[in-house]
Amino acid sequence: MTNAYNTITHFIIEQQRTYGGGGNLTLLLNDIVTSCKAISNQVNHGALIGALGSLDSENVQGEVQKKLDVLSNDIFLGNCEHGGHLMAMASEEMDDIYPIPEDYPKGKYLLLFDPLDGSSNIDVNVSVGTIFSILRAPDGKIGISADDFMQPGTRQICAGYALYGPSTMLVLTTGQGVNGFTLDQNVGEFMLTHPNLKIPKETSEFAINASRARSWEAPVKRYVDECLAGEDGPRERTFNMRWIASMVAEVHRILMRGGVFMYPMDERIRDQGGRLRLLYEANPMAMIIEQANGLATTGRERIVELNPTKLHQRVPVILGSKNEVQRIIDYHQE
Ligand code: F6P
Image 1 (cartoon, rainbow, N blue to C red):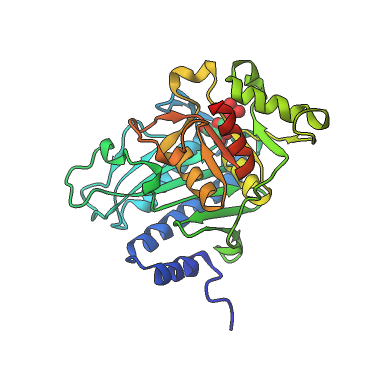
Image 2 (image 1 turned 45 degrees about the vertical axis):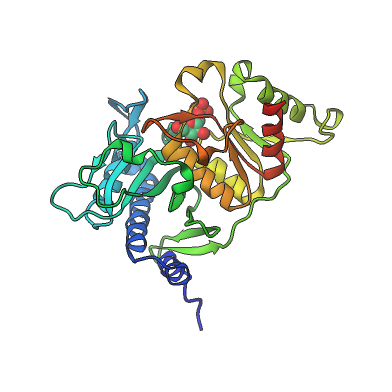
């Protein structure tokens, strides 16, 4: 007998049978998977289809929008709006929420996404990704608003990302561990290639944008200084450093071989609350990391326990291998 849930679709159906739940989430995930395949295709063709470069517009965060940011956003909206599983969507690329249009039936979920994360990498052909998070919509509510999205990350029903790298991968959790799938371009399906991912507790690798070192808070500075001191320092071993400037690629590396990713608070971004967005970057990644035995913190609080107050709220993010992240939390408490 062949493996009955080798494809992501079979896998999701199998999970639904094992852990219960209606078919709505399964169908919504199917729409998300289709969106990621379509974005993968656009990213893959890049300059051949004139998809690279910037537009004249800026998003709500004041960042210049890339053509592929907007295209990817449209792909998500178009694929996910008419299935009848959602009440509304929210994205990095839209100032306000996107309620499901009148013409379509409404469902019980809310979808948040960053359609193309790490977009500074697009034009130089370095890995980028999509991040998504699914929340439950309030029961029977008419007229959905941004307030309905203000739920802590512990309430996420599902979180995942697609990585458009040398191969396209989709990594998913519905709260029963983390599984990775690789897109078979010929079959047009994501295949289960990385079941039950777990992050090693120990690591000697960290990722941080070191150009911001002069603005870091003392606990982060101490942690990095101690790593850099190598065998002669208090850690008594050599550490390796990586920075891709693409959170999806960074988190993926940590899921594969351990490590720590930090975009911590620093003086230059204190006014904004941090760099990365809570609802569609930090929360879904934190859920994935925790489900894979890692930790995700701001340095002071568990990310998924934060109570959001704004759709595009930013937070400090430190996540990855348990023992190292715990050490950084301890440094913040000292
Ligand atoms: O928008 C988020 C993001 O692109 C992340 O994917 C990445 O980790 C970070 O910003 C890179 O920031 P910087 O340009 O400061 O290195």
